[in-house]
Length: 257
Image (cartoon, rainbow, N blue to C red):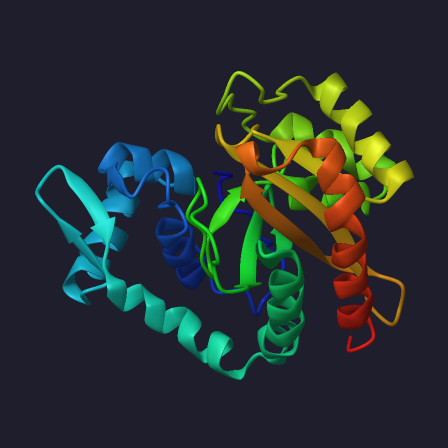
């Protein structure tokens, strides 16, 4: 988690709000419970400041504490509800994802790049049990996911290396690529072939293939993917049987953007 960035020269910038959001964003799926010190480090705050923000969140029922650890409550979902209920993108994408999921009998999803992570915006109904549980709002590291690599490959080359060097490259499985150089080679391969595959790099038993979704301005802001159990299909067969359906789904969604 990166420390908060601010622009002190912007008169309209509200530092208190930015710090509050940085505290909330300190928590994620892998670390849902944090100590005061951990929150301070992640949010780039002093312990005293982090304590004030955390206790305010507890007072407003956005967080709870057992005296040592803090964790968020379901009330924080209110912060995203207005977006999810009004945003047109998930609604536009859902029929396309359902069609891709129906034709392949697998799970299809879309995500955007946010910092060093991908954020899931929508997914089709699950027809089979997947190794990794994902839902709208789930975040995963970009460097070891197929959608993340597709989105990184859409960025200028000069931007990708600093992103990787600034990210925490954790080894989730024995197959996870964590070296900056090998990741740059992989992302360049994705850039040339137009799709990415994550072969059990995020979780053993999970394979994902992803393609970019291009909007009307030629900009890649989304990735679309199909995920499945590794034992069901080899990487070669995914490229042969699933990639055409995935590209067609991405094309259909592109026409709406």
